[in-house]
Amino acid sequence: MDISLRKATESDMDFLFELRDLTMRKYLEQVGMPTSRENYEARIRYQFDCAEIIEYSGEPIGLIKAAYCSETNMWKLIQIQVHPDYQGKQIGRRVIQNLLDLAKDSKASVQLSVIKTNPAQKLYSKLGFIRINELEQEFIMICKP
Image (cartoon, rainbow, N blue to C red; front, top):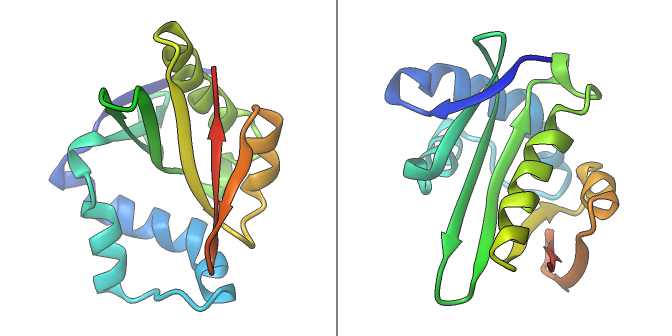
């Protein structure tokens, strides 16, 4: 499968709004989190400098945002979303595993938050993430080297 990453740009905004709605609306609504266009935009623009578009054969199919903090030697997996048409094809797993491999090289941990109703928790657990905290609507998970 020809998967690649490229830096997200302003021209990706329409795709990113659609992707967020398709992949997150149900889970956001289940826990009472907002789904307005303004909220979507705030989340999309949050650390946009770290945003990379996941492409399959040159077509955008997802998003990953990850940021490294040298003070804590930790990667924060801010967002990962794969278009529903491409879910279940190991794409998210491969992209996250690449981040875990990068982190392992520097003995860094990787942390993420996941909405409590999001079934992606199962994937994260299989990849070695464990829950370290529980917030009202989310779990905080970490994978240590």
